[in-house]
Amino acid sequence: MPKMKTKSGAKKRFSMTATGKVKAGQAGKRHGMIKRTKKFIRDARGNTILSDQDSRIVKKYMPYDR
Image 1: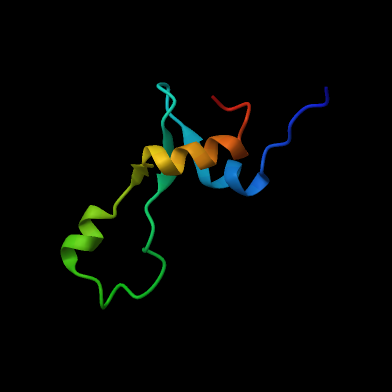
Image 2: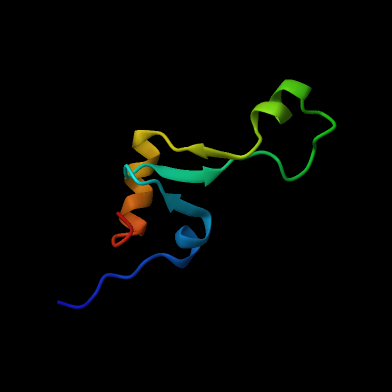
């Protein structure tokens, strides 16, 4: 069988934790910060762990990164 391909967009945007969860950058921080609340900007710092439903999709894109 040939090797499965990794989606190159997914490997740039997501990474795995040691327990198999998917880390991603927090969404909604690119522009329009004036209209966002201070609480939103504070809470959107750093990375986030994807939900189980979303991580199931991302793991199909990255078959060897588990």
